[in-house]
Amino acid sequence: MELRQLTYFVAVCEELSFSRAATRCFISQSAISHQIARLEHDLGVQLFERSTRSVVPTDATTRLLPLAKQMLSLESAIRAAVRASGPRIRLAANMSFATRSLSAIAGAREAHPGAEIEFVIKPFRQRIAAVADGDCDLALIRGSVDQPGLSVEKLWVEDLVIATSTAHPLAGRDDVTLAELGDYPLLLPPEQEQVLLHNVVRKAFADLPTRPTFGPPIPPDHTATMELINRPDAWTILYADSQTEGIATLRLAGRPLRIPVSAVLRSDARRSPILETLLAALHSA
Image (cartoon, rainbow, N blue to C red):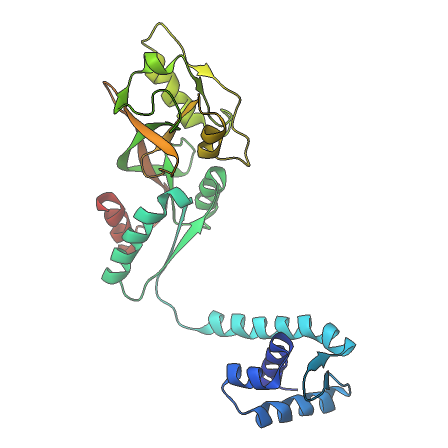
């Protein structure tokens, strides 16, 4: 039994056609049929019931297929393990950072063609843990974090915008005051999930005689924008680059709402040239 025979076997299983499998594997149909026949002879079982119109896997094929895929996956892992590779950086973030991160990654890879830079999607707490454990080299977060063994480097400041449904009474305005917003329910995720946004709201209303009227917390499996569409009388706070159709965004009159975006790194991490280049690119992206 040879690995190439398992490759052909998996192709026939997935295509259910010797001709399509042969095309996929860049060999002739007669060659793939010959190799499958050899595999059947070596294993002492029939793997496919053949006819002029169809290829039907047998029970033996059902048992062999997951093992064959596992064998081929191990082969790929072995080749990857011994293959020479350049420097590798893992950047943890969430999708709201994707545009800026990928632009910075492209610039860093242009400066270091042999480098491998991964963009890893993780929730906030998992990003911090990944850096602390050494699984990732840096993480992008909004706000800051105070944890032994970690350092925080401020990258840029991000604007926040007020968002409402286009059916909201204030939706046609260019800007709005916090006092005006106080008459309408504010929709936010629970504070334990979005401490930063709740702190921003508290700080913004601190000098006012009124406080925001909170609506029900946004459930973990819902989005703020969908909640606004379902609650056209409500408002929320969004990052400036997360605008959605059907949602109106307004500037806050007076002082804008802003939050810092930072990179979290291990305090004892060696600052390689590719890491320094990536951080510089994130600063200027």
